[in-house]
Length: 477
Image (cartoon, rainbow, N blue to C red):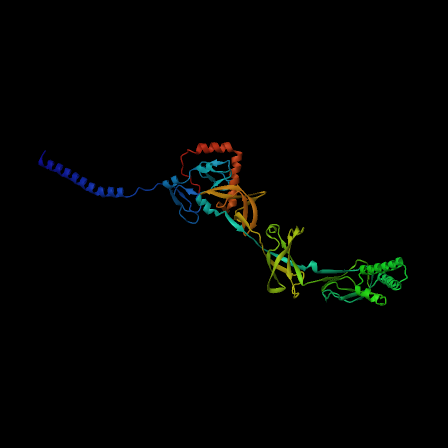
């Protein structure tokens, strides 16, 4: 080899060595930088932020332009294992991947731990789904239940202050001395004069009996004297029974003349509520001629619904406000609870007694009544909104674990202030669902019905899929 060829080989070897040196220097920092950076997290799929059941295998946006949220492998591993997806309208139809039915409804995921439910109809709900449908819970609490009842009442006459004037013998009205209803009268005030042939003839007999007794002497046989006195006594008693006043008998005893008419007087003080006669009118015996009402005390009859009756008892305090007596809050107490219900209104009446010395309270006025029921009940209670009533059953959904809702049939008691007394089924401290419980109830009934129809098939399906490897959900957007 000549000198020129040797020089060419040496130059080529030097160039290769230099290139290898500089290439090594350039790759060393890149390798160190790569080693210092964390490994990229593996994205399994992307989830709709507003509807977690809608997923996509590639990045996507929803109708509002929001980016789908990536779900990483380590997050998916921490999530509950989905065995299969079930048709919400037909639980016997399932799918191994997310799907929709003919109406566009998303299939419901069935998780591996769903087989550990403690009672038939228990529902498992993902936390994100529970938040989206608005599931809220409240604790069952032991509390003292009281009730304030607001109702309406009507002012009525005090029945103990009503007086009636009835005729005890037939006759004609000679003169009507009180001719207007609503007129105030005093006890003993003349009301009308009446001509009664029976009373006139009886007074004549009384006068004859008086003369007979006056004519008795010391030589009158004892038997005749006793008969004369007995006749006088019986005649006087007949006049009293015919409602002839004692003053008239005394006048006859003093030798007064027999009058053609007698005067009927007011039996008590009050106002004339009713007049059943006019001058010249013939009235039969037992006719209702006058009614006199004493308004110094009045009654207020308040109506209670059936669920309010157990709370009220005699002696409970009440506050009344009447539009006819503005600006005044009248105080009263329950005087009587009537032992029957009104057939048309299905309400029960309670009686309140009000003093009315000035006569400002008039019968048939309406009153707004607020009753402070005196009864107290110590009980376990839940909000009324937690009760799901269906037919003869009442139930609540108790959250036994995060995302697990168990239906419990309950026996209910009294209701007060938005809370219901629970006699059986729930203990104090149990969290009960108070919002969206009807959606949970629908799912619970579907699960229970499916379990009753195909219990063995569901068990076999769960056992087959229990060990299946989790798969990335298919795009169901």
